[in-house]
Length: 301
Image 1 (cartoon, rainbow, N blue to C red):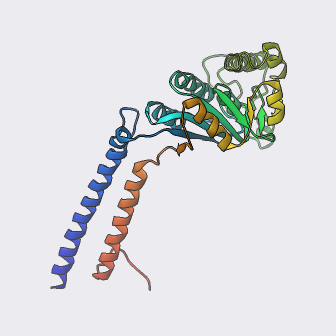
Image 2 (cartoon, rainbow, N blue to C red):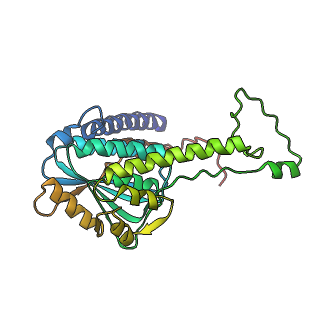
Image 3 (cartoon, rainbow, N blue to C red):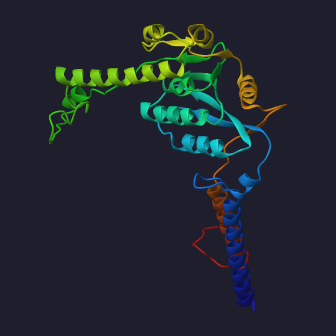
C-alpha cells in the first residue's frame, strides 16, 4: 500500500514538473523580444519611455550590449536611449562595434551617454558618439590612447631552469610571447600597430565630436591623459554636467517625451527563470522521496 502511494506521488510530481516547464517555456516565448522579432508583450507595449542600457566594467565583449541596443531601437515605445557607463576601458573592437551601432540608432532615435564614476579609454570611445554626453564634475574620463602590456618572463624561466622550444612558421608568429626579449623589429611592429589603433580612436572621436572640439586640440590631448568631468566639458569632450536623471531628462527632451519619462531596463534572460523552475521542481521531488522513505544515496546520521 505504501509503495502504491509512493508510485502515485512520483507520477503526480512528474506531471507537475512537465506542467511547470511547459508554463515557463510558454512565458519565455510570450515575453521574448529577441532580435529575430518582437515578442507579444512588445507589440502590446505603449507609452513614451527612455531605455537604459548599462555598460559596466572592463569592456571585453559587446554582444549583450549590442542585443540590448537593437531591442530598444526596434521598440516603438522607447523614444530615446541612455547609455549608463561605468567603465575604465577595455578592448578596442567591442568599443568600435558599439560606436557603430550607436551611429545606426541615432538615425531613428536619440542616444545620450551618462557617465558615472569613470568612462575612460574604450568607455569614452563608446560615449563620444552619443547625441549628448553627460557626466559629473568628478567623473574620470578621456584617456584617449592605446596600451599593450606584454609580460617578460624569459629571465624568470631561465632562473627556474625552464627551457621552451618554439616551433613556428612565420618570423613574427611568437611576437610578444614573453619567452624571449623583443627584438627591435618586433618593437617597431607593435608600436606601429598601437599607433594605427590610436589613429582610429582619434578619427572616430573627431567625427563624433565634430564642431564640439577642434581636431588639432583633440590630437594634442589624445596622449592617454585622463580628465575630470569638469575639465572634459571645457575641452569639448562632454556636453553637460549632471547626474543620471539629468541625462534621462535630456534624452526624454530629445525624444519628444512629455512629462516624467518611464525608464525601461533590459529584461532578464528567461532561461534563468526556467532554471529556477527546474531547480525548484527537483528540490520538491527530493523532499517527496525523503518523506516516502525512498533512499537516493547512502547517508550517515
